Image (cartoon, rainbow, N blue to C red):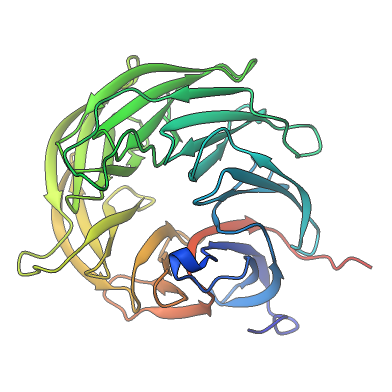
Length: 359
């Protein structure tokens, strides 16, 4: 990997990638990787920051001064201060109130780090202190519901994401284990999490991640186990989801193994993207009045595209190919461009800014 970008090439910010590191995951990652994002869209490697095992999901605080990390398959989260040159300064590693944290989110008010603990089926809130470090878990919330019909993948509640509603004061929690989307309220003063409502999704479908329309009236939910995407109308007051359409993420001729994974919405809300692990593609859907019609499939140039996100220019997708150790940039109807080779990538986070080297 290159350690510095060419002199004079405009720098747009830093990119951080999370990964898997353990033998149990047959992983090749070695820690959080830090890249420079240049104006031509390329990535140049700047730092590698070793961490506790499986730094698999990352998020920034609202000011983008601190980075937080969930250690997948474990029971901890870590906090880092982002230095002027993009490097990370350890602030500590903390118990997360459950097992296998798979998603984390800084609260809107900036006072709490929220954690979705997949294996233990609960959520947790940890106080964010003034210096960006964390305090001990303040509150945990076990999620209700009966397991779905899939014997190995649905053994109980398995929350996979926390996402604020655009206009409501609550968070949605897709639950792969119980085939539900929960609505949960956070008390910003105390960190208490309160269950509000659970919306049932198709049995055995495995809700994983969701995105909202800008007004919050519609949500599109990636269904991992059934390789589908579901469109639902959203009641902002109750936190209720009413499904009205399901679409396959796979072409009709494909008969191999697959699970749906990441989901992203174009900035103009005209297209929806879902990644397929197995078919190893991005399914593109055209959106009209919330309903989806197939817009084709784009190969990801690798295997197991676990994570996708819009690139900072909002004109392309970044894809983390976990199985082939690459980060790629995808434009519709164009071959993928390999931006970086890095072990078992599973998350990508962008921080705008110009580096200033420490002396």
